[in-house]
Length: 72
Ligand SMILES: [Zn+2]
Image 1 (tube, rainbow, N blue to C red):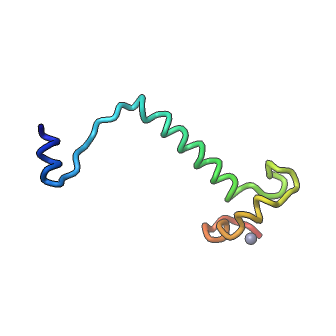
Image 2: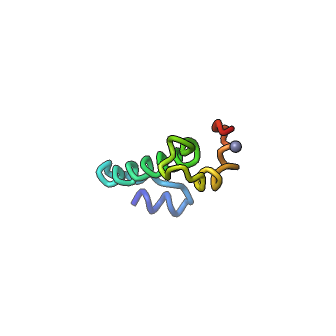
């Protein structure tokens, strides 16, 4: 009934979510974040996952400069 009263007054209410339900989302977010971090900030030259191709580097080149990663 408390949440009904709070909703009726337009207040936000906290919802308890078990850690076991949030862990997969947290792990997925960290993995996606690390992949993006690598592709934008690190993938270049000898450390590139895609060989000598600079396609990824050229694709994210402006973002790399904008975010302050060393480039050239
Ligand atoms: Zn550059």
